[in-house]
Length: 293
Image (cartoon, rainbow, N blue to C red; front, side, top):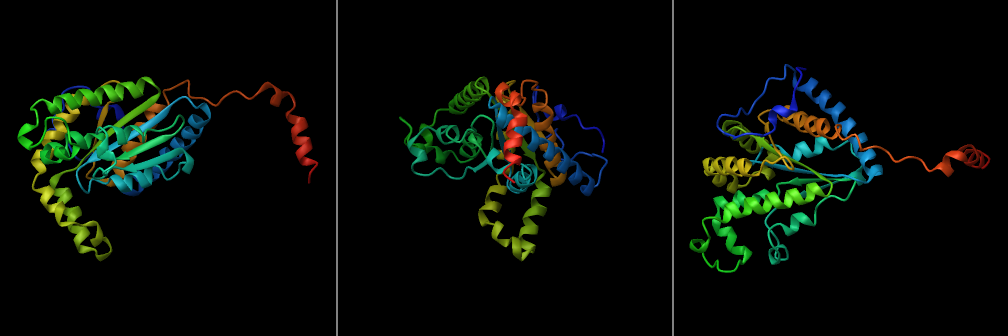
């Protein structure tokens, strides 16, 4: 496999969605890429065990992308080698009545990872500057003061929300949460092919909904608002990584390697030192246990 520098996918300057490729040549077959993913995923699992013992940092992974961009399967493959206690996955769908009784960040805040653990957000708080921007009528469900119709929505609400999200992510980062945000960058043609596969394979028909085609008609709007959101919220504390997603195996590998490459730089993530009393009497403890045989 060609040497891949994951920093190349990090957004550190103005991002143009149309100028960013949805594919990358790794010089490998899907099978070899899958083998590479298995290796880095295993390393991630071991690192998470060390983080659990260290009990200082936690990790938040946010996954965003158009329908069919591969979020579900990516989560399954990247985190399958984790100890189950070390990772929690949250799929944020339409807010419930209880969630709408709070501000839009509340349901994401209570899902943040405990120290030593990972939380994976399948869709995230960014839906509140993406889908609500494409469908501003959804804002009305939040019952915000002074907003009784779409016409009442202030023009600067999105700028306000970008600032609120930046503050939220800066706050959690300063308190030990390592934040990764991945946009799975899919081409419109690849989405068409994946939707067709859902229709052509009876066992996958359940994944398809007529609304998928309705949302596809709004492709250009979503692309524009993704670009805007990423440009406003890719910060040092919580950077965006734009991952070419037309090939699922490659996208999974790049996400796993990006997370691992970043976390292995934390030289203070180490297992705690063994209690001196345990070290002093370790042979006696082993002898006692062996005598029980």
